Image (tube, rainbow, N blue to C red; front, side):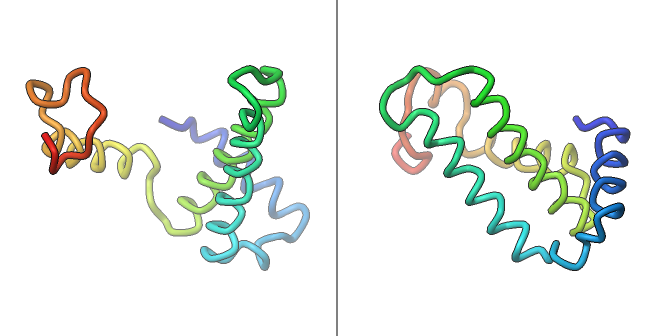
Length: 106
């Protein structure tokens, strides 16, 4: 899912600035929420937003997600695939296809 060079680049960026001290799991989670809000703001007044701005905000969200996963010592690909497996059980194709309802309403 994530090339090791991306994680290495993020680690180097943070280390060079001595920002590890600010990257507690709590602070990283807060940063994810803040950046997700900024991403949502791109679509606040309609569906169209400059693609460059959307990409920049999405990159910020992903950056903090990757930093949090790294801080927690978890593999992003592994946890996404594990969650997908559980979600597949909750939303079987034959019941969920084309429907946007919660699993307990299927």
